[in-house]
Image (cartoon, rainbow, N blue to C red; front, top):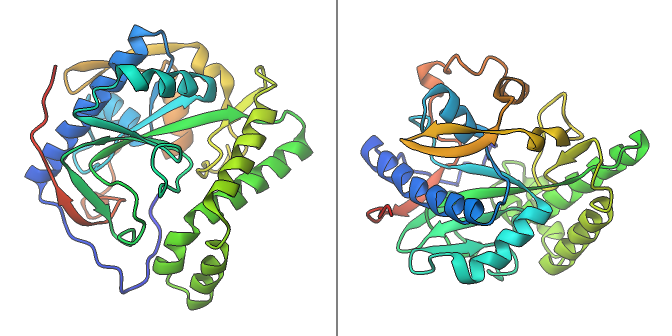
Length: 287
């Protein structure tokens, strides 16, 4: 998600050759994630620009600096436990709030060791950094309309509090920087305990109509979530010469997020949505 930042926040432009090498490092992590999931029958889907890239480019969008995956909470919990023994720890690190005490985001990441990728405005965060892929976890949404609205409000609050340590530095508004500074005093552990309690309560309804990622905004028209049935029908998609899983109904899903997704944006808008202040790469190793 792109957002306006304080003018003091500086970013650099990544040359295309380095961006392409970064994408190959992300492909290395996608292959490892897929290997573990297929071995143990875990459902997942490519998501966001990665899914769009699979459909439109059969690989990464040429200017895209990240990779996204979406998975249900119970499946992610299985994956988390399996990583204790299955993940190649010489190359990769599974990052969430339980494995990195300074990590404040409501989704997990796999990070490629021996790399660096520092997001502009995040230099003070203290969490482990590197070239990464995002793993977005979906939870059940209440079926009752009023409960859905309250759930969406709670998700908004949790997201803003977790982001507050960044907002206190990068938001262009002086007053909002001060407000985020106050929010950042709320202990991270408290927020994650609340998030996990809400998720556990909602996930008791394993047949709810909608699911959503609690710590990420959803597109207009799907503010409460996406249909759970998307996970009932997955298909294979070619991506950089490999095969990965994603929702079979790609047209409905991508159109819901991007509108006319097959038409690339104009050249002036083909830039990274993740501003970077520093990076270091390594050579990817495919197995």
